[in-house]
Image (cartoon, rainbow, N blue to C red; front, side, top):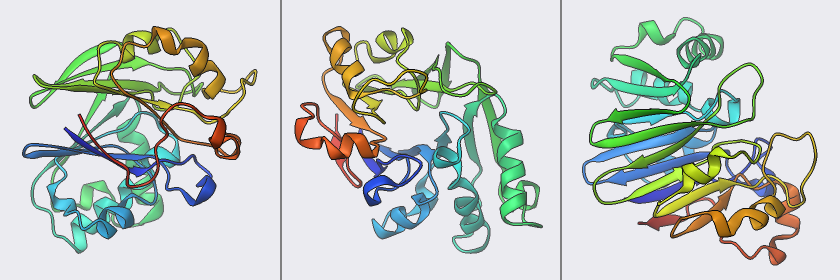
Length: 245
C-alpha cells in the first residue's frame, strides 16, 4: 500500500497544516480515511484524479474529519461528473450527519439530488468488517460523548495499517496497533493533560514498548507538539508525506 498524509494537522490547522485526511492507493483501489475541509483542494494540487476514489472511511463525526466530503460530492455532481457509486463508511450517525451537512452547506444540492449513488454503511464498535478485499476492524475509541469514535485496522493479504482517529489513550490501542506494518497515532498534545480527550506524546512514550508495529507515525499535531518538535523522538507526519508499506 501507498499512503499519503493529505492532512496532518488538528482542527485548528495549527502550523498551517491541513486537517485530517489519509489517501491510500493499493493496486487498483484508492480510498480515503477521513476527509477534512482542505482535502479536495490538496488532492487536486497533488494532481490526483478524485474520480479514482473508490470509498471513504470516517473515524468520527467532528468537522475536521468529515467536513470536506460535501465539497467532494459537489465536485462529483457538477465538475468531474461522477457516475460510479461510492460507499461511505463510518460510525453510527454518519448518514444522518452527512446528509444534514450537505444540505446545510449547499441548500438544494443534497445527497438525494446527486446523479450517482451514495451508499452509507455504519460500523458497530469492536466489529470485523469487509470492504472489497480488505478486512476492516473497527475499535471503539474515546473522544466524543454523543457518538461513537472508531479506530481502524485495515489489512489485506500483503500489508496492514492502523489509525487511532481522535481519542484518549485507551486499552483498545494495544490491539488496534498489534501486528501492523504501520500505526498512525494522533498526538494533539506534548504533555499529558487530565480531562482532555486527546493523546499526548508523553502517553505514547509511556506505552511505546507495548505497541507491536513495524513503524509508528504521529499525526493530528497540535501547537504544543509543534513547539517541542525538536524533542520528539518518534516520526511525525507532515502534509503530503508519502509512506509505502
